[in-house]
Length: 178
Image (cartoon, rainbow, N blue to C red; front, side, top):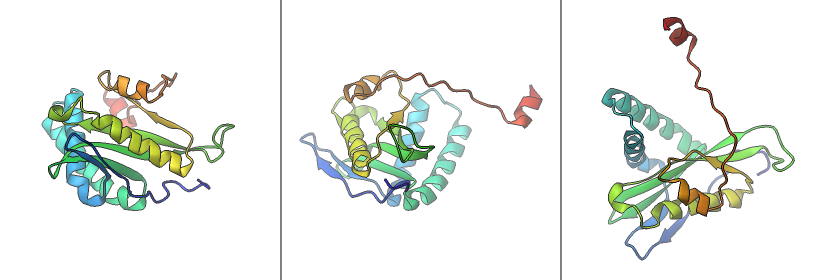
């Protein structure tokens, strides 16, 4: 990787016998990516429509700048001209380690398939496209967070549970309210 985050990705495309194809997404796919991201959050239990609207607007602004710079990459599945699934990739940089001299890791996110298109191998194909991109860049580590319904896809791909711990910090203003 030579210390460069998000080197230019090569175009990726694959076809299935199931009437869908996987391709690299571009900034022109923002609307579909945001729509699927919103659906993912809804399925995760976020029901506040105002909050979902704000997240969608913020996501659109983020993608408009991060995608052209290569800081966020995405892949979509299309069927009949409609985007039916997506997956994203961001890069995290940290100090070099014994197993990762560049210190760059891939973080896979927003893998989501519309309900009517599930159980056809689409999410697995998107994951394979993302892993292909990471390998092509020489990035030795990929991580993600999963839902219980998606866990088997990642385990079949070789992902292992990790001892990661997380703390959601409140802002100082939020802490004063409590």
